[in-house]
Length: 378
Image 1 (cartoon, rainbow, N blue to C red):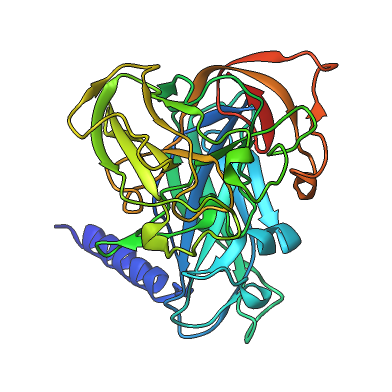
Image 2: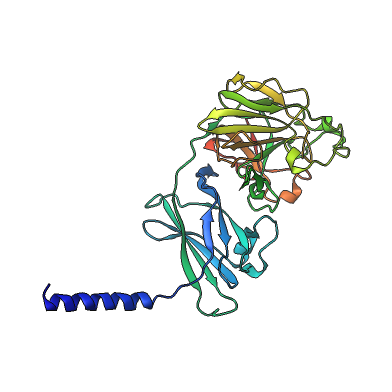
């Protein structure tokens, strides 16, 4: 090797060492996605639900100031949260408690519940995350931004028929409810999951928005009580439970722990590692048994009032394993339903008429998930 080449090699090595020596290590929280979900269409828009899990492995506190989700190809922001909206979505891990002032002490963990609609046109099917934070005990004037998970988007292909007949049925759920199905983790076999991430509670109403005729404390007076429950797809009954009794009144209903939340239930394997769950079924009404083949539209049970329930209704969700609590909730859409109205103010549910849509004419909807707290018919 010539002397000039040796000198150039030494200069490059020293330059590289100086550059490496000048790097500064910034402690940041770990960011991960516990379960990557698929998109589903709600109210005509592509919507996605998932959770970001944060763990502070640093030796100092970290204050989360915001989160930005960008489109992968262009870097264009598609969703962001900060301040009040961040506070609404950010919770300490394993609790319903808000993260105090968005500050994570060393060794603490939290969850940011993500659910948002996506632009109708994206230049790529990739989303990127950027987390913004400061050290409240150090330099708060210079926020730090770090890159988080990157993932590809895909739409769900889980198409289902109706779980019930007729209507009006209120499709009750809301992603922002602190103790709604979407935010309740269950830990089974050492892993925390959200089985009800996409669960819907179906409650039958009359045109005035009432749930029952006469005394609502008597469950037989409820409009939905005893309604036939239908198989939403061809499949095989995976499991069933029919040993819960039923109180004839709301006031006499016992309190059940989480492990008995389902009451009487049926799970149907519908293919592609998807299981349809029907919960709170009427005692003695289950017409199928594990291993039995069913066809879409078959009557499999009746709507009841068993398990952890505040009134007769059908709890319905789809999951990735045959376990009511030990599986991840999976998105699905209904092949067809009619949109009748909605409850924009859910505090009026059961107390006031629902608001009709489209000048009181029902609107035919295809290949969508019913919107939160809408009123539909099958």
